[in-house]
Image (cartoon, rainbow, N blue to C red; front, top):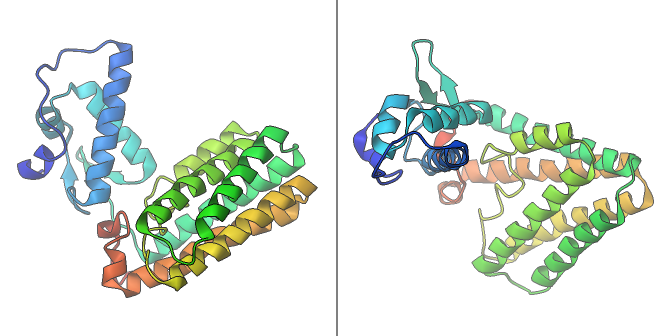
Length: 265
């Protein structure tokens, strides 16, 4: 791996002594976040080899947290294991991305249906309605600033997280979290693609009306409707992906854009 690229990940630590369990967990998380940021941000390029020993030297950590962090990124789908050892940063075709979006929508639909069938609690509904109300306030303005789009992203992320939690299945919730780890498959992947003009606000209005409809379906016990709405909601991202791929300016705003293998479906 190129030294300059890895050096940008983090300064070297003063010591690499073996940490206790709590410190090891903290170092693993830190290494995981640094490596994910490097991949999504383009410091580590698609097709670039990543080796444990190089990261030990450059990140100033012991091999244990580095090894754990690499395994986590492998599980997230951002890395591939090489037969001779080490890893390589993955790239993704347009078909891969569309499949990831579809998977996320399928799992969110399942979560919505389960939340309805198992009884979405009062607290969960209150949290979801609070998200809707806060987004209503943002979208009341005729045009939105970048700060407003960022705030929308925060409330949108909370809405999707609350829905996943409301399903009452730790298994579904874990799989949904995993499906969202790819930068272009998360609910907020395309929020910041275009933050000017009425069309950008109008697009959020459409997605937000789906939020509102899902909450009402949950409240009424309409599981099939809630499931269908969440699947349709995720599919909004397909149109956003097409727009991103058609515009170099828009593509530059997409996290992980450097991982997309252009011209491959």
